[in-house]
Image 1: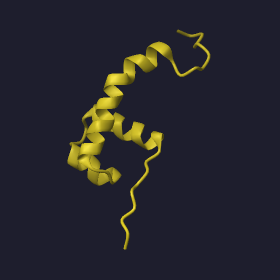
Image 2 (image 1 turned 135 degrees about the vertical axis):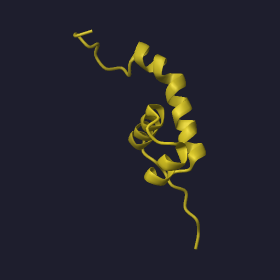
Image 3 (image 1 turned 90 degrees about the horizontal axis):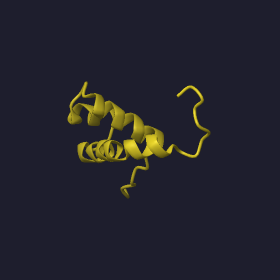
Image 4 (image 1 turned 180 degrees about the horizontal axis):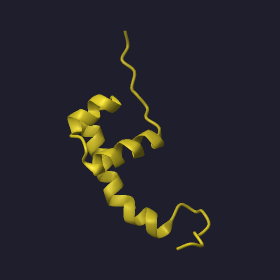
Length: 68
């Protein structure tokens, strides 16, 4: 049987990274719950941390929020 690589959607990656940032569970617990490798979850968490300010400052091309 050929091993197939799993492709996670950006939504799943963001949810897992946010769960890792919250710190309610350890990486192995998150890995077991979401079905990913702990190193992969750590990578997603670090990417979210490093790019969060850029995302918030520049936005994603959507209209500016009038309430801010």
